[in-house]
Picture 1: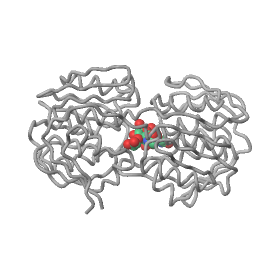
Picture 2: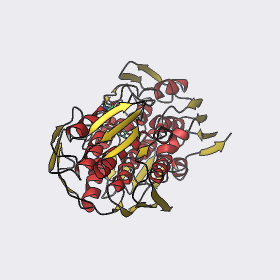
Picture 3: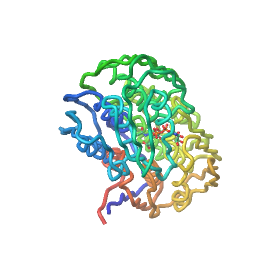
Picture 4: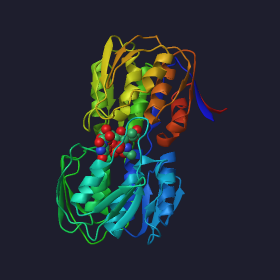
Length: 418
Ligand code: EPZ
């Protein structure tokens, strides 16, 4: 079992480069199922979730081979059109194979992804729009059974701007008969990246990044040759590592425009932020103010940075009220931060953080989910003494060599096998 050991209390400084986006790469790899042939993706991060996706693509008779951060996917005629439980349970986003396989082959059986630590994670906003496009869907024995002679375009209004739901239906709609109009869609950069990739494959899509996406169905698509956007959540995590240690950190190869919710919050706290074409720099700040935070769909503050920002607020001057509006159970890092001495009053979807600079002390803590792992590492960086983070298999799902990147900025951090 690996752990990450941090001896914190040291200001980080220097430049660090982000990897490709996990949450962009996953839907892009499933989009390959829409077109036979050899697809090539660049800037694909080396993560456990990508490994799980390759496993599922291989199960669907696709060949995958990686050279560094290039991943090639050869899509052949599929064998059985099944995404089995033992693969899907490892990575919930496997549900994103549903739309492409149904649209291209007219039938598919996909295991229900089930919930996870942060919430029940239902998929009704994936299923109902597919039914509206003409799919016949039954859910039994823990599987989604979907069939459709030919999906037919329609106007779909999402109850909530779901990222995965938008991505699944957008992919399915590229091969529908006629036009599909999607309203109240997610505007996340990863959704925009998927739309751009689909367009490069011959799809007729417009409106990505706004609340309405219009797709005119085509008969078939061509293989992708596409490069994944930088990971904005990793970039935000690295900026917060600089901020919480009172350091001077420049994150390069990122998209400042994807980070403005965080940049504005850091400025409200009193941090000086500089931005360039593909970099953002946070400069040293001795004492920052507490600010309130509500997570929201993009361009609001991303839920995937909520835990990391909470770590920063434990060291702020004042009280921060953090409201998690996307997931119903995304405060499990609170009790672990409390073990380090943080003063946080958790309620259902609100956590009141009573900032206390210097109030954290190193402690053994346990990662409960992907972004909570990063939160605990940031808290460890901010405090004297040794912090040992266990269950870091959560971290390895979504961060590529995070400890090496932080060590490159001067952090006293290492991975140990116990
Ligand atoms: C994506 O998950 C991301 N994952 C998540 O990142 C991210 O937190 C989330 O979007 C929100 O930005 C990937 O892109 C692989 P949603 P997704 O559908 O698509 C409810 C990380 O840390 N909902 O926008 O599952 C749902 O319960 C991960 O990298 C329904 O009710 O998110 C949740 O409360 C964590 N019915 C809310 O919507 C549905 O059919 C947001 O879910 C679908 C969702």
